[in-house]
Length: 331
Ligand SMILES: Cc1cc2nc3c(=O)[nH]c(=O)nc-3n(C[C@H](O)[C@H](O)[C@H](O)COP(=O)(O)OP(=O)(O)OC[C@H]3O[C@@H](n4cnc5c(N)ncnc54)[C@H](O)[C@@H]3O)c2cc1C
Ligand code: SF4
Image 1 (tube, rainbow, N blue to C red):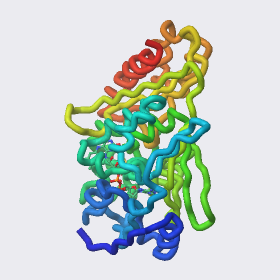
Image 2 (image 1 turned 120 degrees about the vertical axis):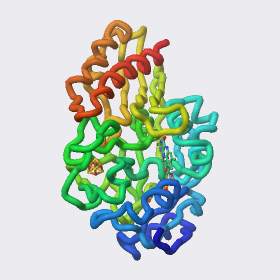
Image 3 (image 1 turned 180 degrees about the vertical axis):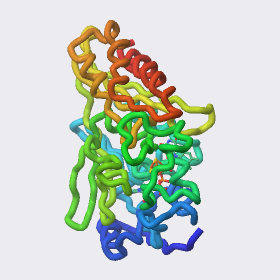
């Protein structure tokens, strides 16, 4: 691994100033479980993915660590809060269990102890060609996607174009389902971005996965109160029982009255370059009895799925899991 300079920021303003001073050669460092142990390995780079030379630690910024429930019932979670703190928060779990469960399903206890929310949301994709030495693919600034002709069993089945990664973050899906938003800091101050608009696909810019500019960082995440008669649910299917990324995950937030769908969000992980909102399923359930219509509604995912040569199996899994997760919110 190449050596790097480490800068401990004491405030958000200091971190932003360091990013602006060093430019694209600098990266935000949180737990380091992806950045230092994965992305900074000497072989994971290309002309569009240079190895960072300076790391700016944000776990040293007190305002970025911790969980706060405001008097209005909304929650704010600092981006440098560990995944263990989130998974073990009874206050969060009481209202937003889809979020605590998604955090608890990330990696292993050891990684959750130092891995942070901001790092989980902003981690780079896991495509094995991207992380392999000999593949100078689009995402590294090359001119080919090796997943198109290679082993694509874990790649995208929806919304892949140019690049077929699946977004790796478990907490991102839960946050989208909860209609949460991000506070982003940059040289011009802070801005608030709903997670609906936070993640970007390959067509927008194949070299990145979200709206953060090189001189910006994620400061915290806000989750609004749930509407009355709303329940949440989470399920993550993995290839193996020990820690692993999602083959497919479903995060659901459902508002119902006497079993009829009033409102809700169904977000799929492991299937698309961004956490994918299954609007076709939501629309098929709108105003209808959930139990009577869930089978046909879940199957509507076939109308948007475009599987690759080796991953059509994921379509059937998604349909089965949507049904199971949505039904668990009315049980
Ligand atoms: C063995 C293993 C298994 C894993 N399994 C899973 C899994 O099942 N599910 C899952 O979701 N993830 C999984 N991960 C990924 C893991 O969750 C992330 O690596 C971890 O959550 C990242 O947190 P971190 O604080 O260590 O991030 P870091 O490694 O420090 O940072 C990750 C990226 O986010 C950026 N970043 C960090 N904080 C901020 C911020 N505040 N603002 C802007 N950018 C920021 C960094 O610049 C970097 O690019 C796994 C990782 C490993 C190593
Ligand atoms: S899916 Fe994306 S990251 Fe993977 S090889 Fe293709 S372009 Fe590269």
